[in-house]
Amino acid sequence: MPIVPEVPAYGGDQDDDRGAARLSGPLFRDESFRDATFRDETFRDETTSAQPRAAAPQTQNPEPMPDAPQPASAPQKKSAGRDLGAAIGVGVGLGVVIVASLFVVKAVFVGVIAVAVVVGLWELTSRLEERKGIRAPLVPLAVGGAAMVVAGYVRDAEGAWVAMALTALAVLVWRMTEPPEGYLKDVTAGVFAAFYVPFLATFVAMMLTADDGPQRVLTFLLLTVVSDTGAYAVGWRFGKHKLAPRISPGKTREGLLGAVSFAMVAGALCMQFLIDEGTWWQGLLLGLAVAASATLGDLGESMIKRDLGIKDMGTLLPGHGGIMDRLDSLLPTAPVVWLLLVLFVGSG
Figure 1 (tube, rainbow, N blue to C red):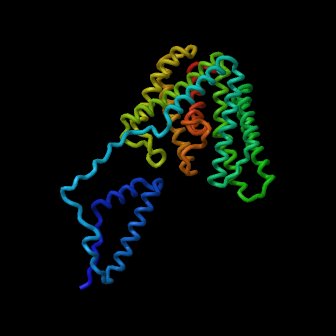
Figure 2: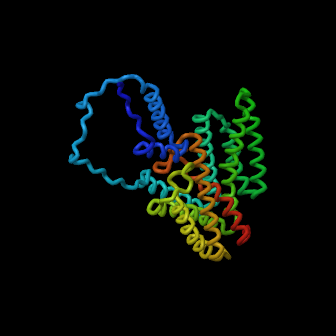
Figure 3: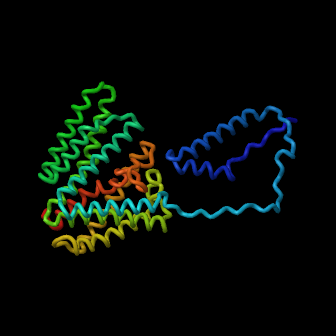
C-alpha cells in the first residue's frame, strides 16, 4: 500500500502566517508571497499524493530531545526607527535659523519659505519621475512656487490665487514642448504639486503680514511641532491600537490623543501670552484643530509615499528624511491656523 504524505490540516502554526497575511493587507507583500507559496506547495502535494514514495530514513530528521534546553528569545526593545541624535540636532539647527530669520527681518523669513518650497517641489517631482515615470515640469513649478509665496506676502490671498492660476497655466504650456504621450498625467501631477506645496505655504507668508505676524507664525510652528512630539511620545510609550494600519502602521490612537492633549495645552498658552487679544479658550480650539490637521497631513503624505513605494521623500536632512518629510504636517496646518487666527483676533 503506497505511503500517502499527510498534508497539515488548516490550523496550528501555519494559521498564524495565513492570518497575518490576511490582516496586514496588500501593504505587506512578504507575507502575501509566503502565503501564496504555501498554497502552491500544498496544491502540488495533494495532486501528487497518489504517487508511491519511499519512507525517508528516520536518521535524516531526528526528533529533538524532549529535555534539550531551548535558547531563550531575547526581549525586543522599542526602537524609534531613526537616528534620534541626528534628528534632534538637525531639528534644533532648523529651529534656530527659522526663529532668527522670523524676528530679525520678515522678508528674510519669506525667503526661507520660498527656498523650502523649491526644495520640496524638487523632491516631490523627482520621486514621481523615479517611481511612476510622471514628469511634472519642475522649472515652472519652482519659479511659480516662489512667486506664489512672495505674492501671498505682498498681496495677501488675492495675490496667492492669481499666482497659483498663472503657475498652473505655465505648467500646461511648458509641457507642450515635449511629446504628447503622458501629457495628461504630467500636467495633473504638476497642478497637484503647485497646490500641495507652494499654495499651502503661502498661508504662512500671509500670517506674517499681521502686526503680530512673527508671533502668529511662531504659534503655528510651535503647535505643529508640539502635536507631532505628543503623538510620538505617547504613541511610542503607550500605543497599542493602530490608527490607520494600511496607511501608517506606526500611528496609534493613543498617539493621536497625545497629540490633541499636548497641542491644546500649548495652544492655550500661546494664545494667552503670544497673540494680541487672544484668550486661552481660543487656544484650546486652535490646538485641537492643529492636532487634527497635522495628523491628516502626515497621513496624506504617507499615502503618497506608500503609492510610490518609498520610506522618505529625500535624504537632505539626517534623521528626518527630506524637506517634504518635515513639511507634511506643516503644509495642511497653515491654512487652518491662518483662518482661525483671523476669526479669533482679526487679520491684524
